[in-house]
Length: 362
Image (cartoon, rainbow, N blue to C red; front, side, top):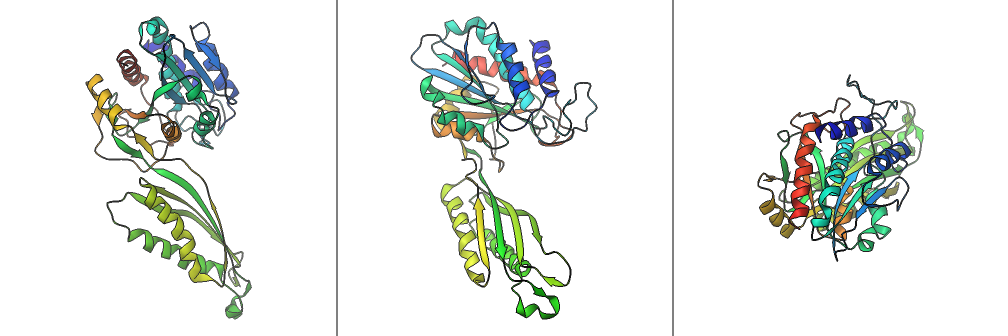
């Protein structure tokens, strides 16, 4: 199995594609699944859903994301990306290889199970969020899914270690874009203008002060990574643009942060503010009963000490059915989204074995 899984991963690594349109990736997955005893459909473009129908009343689902990142690969591996400026730098090639390996194993014993099994290969996890689109197509209802599982490679756990945490695991997140409009004037007569750059700077500090005063027991953040304003040094800027991210593990805190974006702006009524806040992804919230159940099934399962403030659109499935998301350690400490991201495919066998144990004990 290791050689098959290694080949899947390395083949997929060479054909990274972005967002929702992944024709080569989809074709590869269909090719590997061809001949297996499962029904195939594509509810949205580039998605692949494989259904192992065991004529049972309920189904367990397993999901892999498919899309890559607009990152220039800097590794020198012989199977490096063949698509310039695009790379599987977040491990989705590994996720697909894991699920394809599981499919091969599943095909040999699924008729012995007490459930049906649905494998979901999903595009657009990084952007714009393919999980929601698939959920809106009604696939969970169509296949009578009662619970769902997913796995993400994680560089900061020992190689092959599988871990999760009950309840909130990964943050709700939204992208925040703010445009502030003032009035231009020559710097020598700055009082005749409305300085959008100054207002933007003050407003940004107001937001950071507000966020810092929230009780530390609530995990949250509101940070801006880009601020752009002005054209030349001696002209008052009439426009300031801010780009940031807002994240929380608590819905009430998230809504408070969102409201404060508008409230803090009221202090600068001389300027005009425009806001664009993406819907983002919900909190990855692991069903506590399922975590307890899986913990009894998987002797090697570790429970994480804390949550993570990154986000994952697996959370959309959990809005519909109970689910558990796992981290699978690579042991490399090479961060996700890094141009040198790599791992030993042998760790994927641990994920396959975990999935086998889960379905056999459904």
